[in-house]
Length: 501
Image (tube, rainbow, N blue to C red):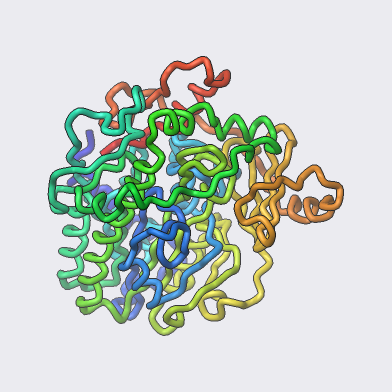
């Protein structure tokens, strides 16, 4: 096992080697005149925030306060609805269809051996790059990307698991902890980042902070559960026959006989929503502690703050739970950007933007060259003028040749077997009516299909299963005659590395 000190030395060596090799390195030594970057990732957070209004009971006062200081993107989407491919795409600037990294068990470095990550790029131009928590997908952290990396500690767990009573559900669990916030890994992560902000830095910094909650299992201190009494829980809107007009591949992914059936059979829906809301409120509190320290630091006026989620989450919509779909719930993400002197406080942008666009945007904001491999487009014009012309939909990919195209009005899905879905968000924001087979929408589909990737690289190698769940092994779903053929292997692939502390 590589020690933390080795991570630090390796990161420093690679960083300074890149400084020497990168052309146009005038940025090195530019000093504090360049803005700092505070880069905050939140795992598995969908649109259940106050500023996006995804659930009427969501309590995110600290994220809402930040949203009032900068710009929110109401139509921000991930490039893949799973941790590893989404984070790889964002941090490397490459579409999943270009890299072949489609699932959680695809190691990304073998597919992108020479690709400069956003962290490496900033380090090469003189930035002090520190990272803590979950940034790359757990088992695929990248030592080359850090000057210093701080490994977030694990969390306490309740006795007598599973708390929710669902048998063989592994980490698909929720319930309160009788501990204080300070015992939680995300609280310790905030402590580490706050300590960094309390130090004097002689060059611009890029501080990356990756929070775990609201990732499963939803174990957070009891007061957060108490804030959402079960008797008052509002469930998501669900149409019982929602999958009747969905193609077979979409139904296979949704798998209503799996998680959703078990949640209903054990009367856990309200409890699950309570657990997710409690976990969101908890992580908002930890982000708030960090932002409070940041606002009091000497860096508040010369630092870009960006908060993003890696993908969305279903809680019964489309009769599905977790991420791993091409529908709105799994692909829409929170995105807040605050740039001193650029973003108007409290502004909103309703253009469709991709997490892929973050890498080039940060480069442009910090006056760094955009590496030629980067496939996103800088959204700086939208940061300056949120209603500026913008004709780019977002492409989200889940597995080889399965894509969604999301424009401001439409979501078009084409699966690997050629079957399709089309939803009109102007009239059908819940995506309940699939219009793909209606001839009246042939031209709409054709226009959206022009944006589908022209390159679809075959899936890269898979990591070998690990038996120790604490180290990121696979969790197989329970045996059941209701599971479709091949579905157990599919979910084993998706869950790889999800639960590493």
